[in-house]
Length: 178
Image (cartoon, rainbow, N blue to C red):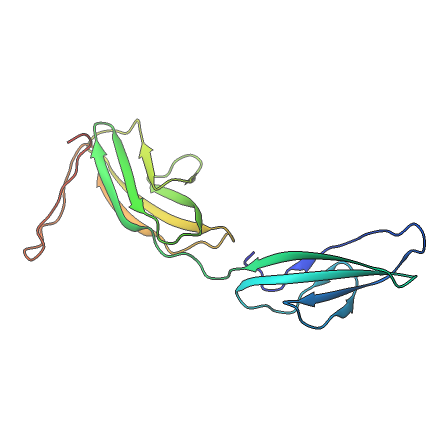
């Protein structure tokens, strides 16, 4: 989660004596008495072990442990975003910026009817386009905690491979199937 204060909900039953109370400990710390639902105090990014202890009216306990992963850091921009023109289509390719990325958001100008597309791979093919029309694409990475990184932008003309020439570095132009 990207919430530093997640709310925990827990429950159990004891048909013999009934539940007296619950106790909670974070990262093997001291147990404190709590009720459900319980909102954690602010936690730093990382993995946290949460232990809930149910105490019945006879003094018996039942313990359950769960892991809470807190991640408030957005992923980086997609790396080396490239728009590869083709006949009536554009292929976008990029490199994964971080290992915890689970999907990418793609936005195009002129816009699609649904405004954004979501993919889980590091490429996307936009088809049925008119040759000679210029499109601007923005690609964001999204991590497993739903943090969105900054976007990378690429401008591509359908059916035309063009790239700026830099005297010290040269230039590489790509075209579909060439």
